[in-house]
Amino acid sequence: MALKKDGLDLSVELGPLKLKNPVIAASGTFGYGEEYAGIIPLKSLGALITKGLSLEPRKGNPPPRVAETASGMLNAIGLENVGLEVFLREKMPFLRKAKCSVLVNIFGCVEEEYAEMARRLSDVEGIAGLEANISCPNVKAGGTIFATEAKLVFQVISKIRQATSSFLMVKLSPNVGDIAKIAVAAEEAGADAISLINSLTGMAIDIKTRTPILANITGGLSGPAIKPIGLRMVWQVAQAVHIPVVGIGGITTPEDALEYLIAGAAAIQVGSAHFIDPRASLKIIDGIQVYLRANDLSSVSSLVGSLKVG
Image 1: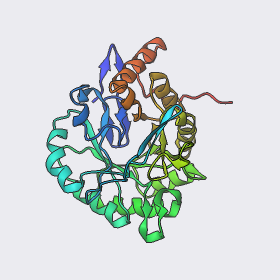
Image 2 (image 1 turned 45 degrees about the vertical axis):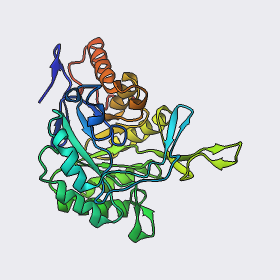
Image 3 (image 1 turned 45 degrees about the horizontal axis):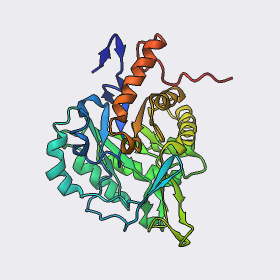
Image 4 (image 1 turned 90 degrees about the horizontal axis):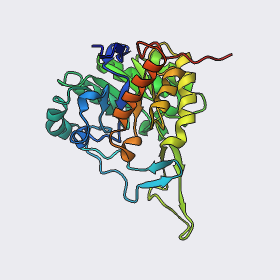
């Protein structure tokens, strides 16, 4: 499945999942793929990850739910989505023709919902695997976020693993004390890969009215401002687990992507950058090739984890 240009091998392996290149369109910023199909050739991407999907449709939070910040943005969309049945009926026909690997981002409020989503998506034609967003409150645990406790992470990922043999990537929250411990729990529960980081919790205030800018009060911070945090956490997790790590957080340029790869990420996801430049992923793919040629490297894999310390 290797994609070679000018002798360059851009292919990457995320455990059992093989991608033509390491650049993935992140969940939440790329819709269901169709929204960008008239702007970029989806077949050029390593993969695309759908907007987060739940068993039942969700309307999300009331507006305003997006706010611009210095070098980033806050969002409190509230995981709005069409629900599983509509997704399968109305979105999958297009995604089967996308000519790139399609991962479905799933979430739930209890372990059983995650397992049911995984089970029902397992044998759907055109789906290469799942990304589990565990930055959700566990209603059975009094609203504790799944991703913040290693025990809860192990429990929910074990449930998903029991429900499917499909490729399973687990998306981790940065709002924890020991990210490596959380990642190890996901690996031990059966994850094939780890993706991080999800957005950081933040807020913004209108000083004229002295009210929160977001109706939800708090939201998720993403964009260039969080890259140093994402980079640090990817580096830590890559040293702690034996499964591939996918880097997310503030990647807007080829240089950003290269930093993540050097830190230990086997692939990267591009998110908020698509709001500024819908063709950001393509430019990053091109920039990676330029770097490989300039440094006499024949493959992306030779770059992964090449950070020199000490």
